[in-house]
Amino acid sequence: MRKTLIAFLASMLAPILIFAQAEGEAPGIDEKINAAVKPAADAIGRIVFYSVQLGESATSQMPIVIIILLLSAVIFTVYFKFINLTGLKLAINTVRGKYTDPTDTGEVSHFQALTAALSGTVGLGNIAGVAIAISLGGPGATFWMICAGLLGMSSKFVECTLGVRYRDIGPDGTVYGGPMYYLSKGLREKGFTNLGKFLAVFFAIMCIGGSFGGGNMFQANQAAQQFNSMVGAEAGSAGFVFGLLMACIVAVVIIGGIKRIGRVTEKIVPAMVGIYIAAALIIIFANFSSIPSAFGQILSGAFTPLGIAGGFVGVLVQGFRRAAFSNEAGVGSAAIAHSAVRTEYAASEGIVALLEPFIDTVVVCTMTALVIIITNGDGSIMTYGVPEGDGVLATSKAFASVLPWFPYILTVAVVLFAFSTMLSWSYYGLQAWKYLFGRTRISDLSYKLLFCVFIVIGSAIELGAVTDFSDAMIFAMVLPNVVGLFILLPEVKKALKRYKGDIDAGKLG
Image (tube, rainbow, N blue to C red; front, side):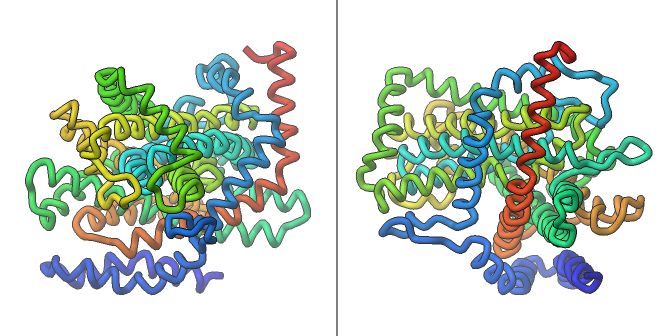
C-alpha cells in the first residue's frame, strides 16, 4: 500500500517536475505532460467510461458508470417514497434554519454546507456542457436532463446523510467526513471490514486525483482562456500571471479551512447563480412569445426527435449524461462538504443536500437550455444533431444575441464558477489526503501548496490528457461509493425516521 501511495504522489508531482525542467520552453511543456499522462488516461478512461450501445448511432452510447448512477437514483427514489419531491418543503425549512440549534456539533451552517457543495457542481458544465448536449440531442435532451436531475436528488440525500452519520470529530472540533469514513466505518459495522478499508482507500486516491485535475487545472485553464480572450491577451505568459493571481486568492481562502470556504461560498454562489439566472430571465422574457414554442420543442423532441442521430435513444442518452456530469449525484464528493454541517441529525443534511441537483440541473441547466433554444430559432447558434465544439462560445452567442454585453458577464461568471469549484474541490481533496496521510499540519500544508501550484500550471498550458485522466478518476469514485450506499441504506432510513419523528413530536423548531 505504501508503495502504491508513493507512486501515486510521484505521478501528481510529475507535471511540476516537467514544468521546472522545461522553464522557458512554453511551447513544449503541454506536449510533454500530455505524452506522459496520455497512456494512463486512455487506459483508465476506457475502463471507467466503458460504454454500451443503446441505439444505432455514436450519440446513443451510454457509459456504464452513468447507467449505474441512474439506476441507483431510481432505486433510492422508490425506496424512500419519492423523497426528492416530498422532502422539498422540509429541505427549504431546514436550510432556513428552522430546525437548527447553533450549539450543535459541526463547523458550518446548513446553508454554508449547501453552497460549498453547490460551488463544486455549478460551473462550466452548466454553461458549456448544456450547449454541447443540446447540439447533439436537440431540445429534447433538456427534458431527460431535468428527469435525471430530479432522480439525482435522492442519491444526494442518501450519500450526504451517511456523510454526517459516520463523520469523525477531532478534539478541536474539526470535522472529517465523506465516503472514506462511511465506507470504512459503516461497512465495518456490517461485517465487511476489509472491503470497507479497500473501498475507502480507493475512493480517497481517486478523489485526490480528481481534485488536482477536473477540480483544479481544468477550471483554471478554462477561466484563463475566457479571461485572456476577453482582454485580448496571448495565452502563454498571460495565463501564467492569471494562474498566479488565482492561486494566491484561492490560497487565502483554503488556508482558513471549511469555515472560511463556507463564508466565501455563501456569498459567491448565490451571487453568481443569481446574476446568471437574471440574465437568462431577461432573454427568456424578451422573447416571451417564443416560450411556448421552446417548451413544445423540448417535449416533442424528447420523444419524437427529428433529424437527431440516434433518435429517441440518442436524445435520452445526451440528457442523462449531461445531468450526471453536472450534478455529480452518486459520485460521493458532495458528502465531504455536507459532513461539516452543524447538526445532531444526519438526515437533516441529507434533506438539505437534495436541493443541490435541483438548483444545479433543474434550474441552472434548464435556464441555459431555454436561452439556447429560444435564440436558436433561425439556426444561428447551432445546428441540432451536429456536435458543437465550443460550448462556452455557443452559450455566449446565445446570450449576446439579445444582450450584446453579456460576454463580459459570462467571463466574470466563468471565473467565479471556476474559483468556487476550486474551493470546494480543494476541500474534497484535502479530506481524502488527510485520510491517507494523517491529520498533521505538514499533511495539511503540503496538499494546499500542491493544489495552488497546479492552479498556475493549469492556467498556463493545455492539459487535454490530464483533464481526461482526472475526469475518469472522478467518475471512478462512483464504484466504491455506490456499493457503500446500498449496503448502508437501512442506516439512512433510521436517520430519516429519527429526524422526522422529532420534528413531528415538536422537539425541533
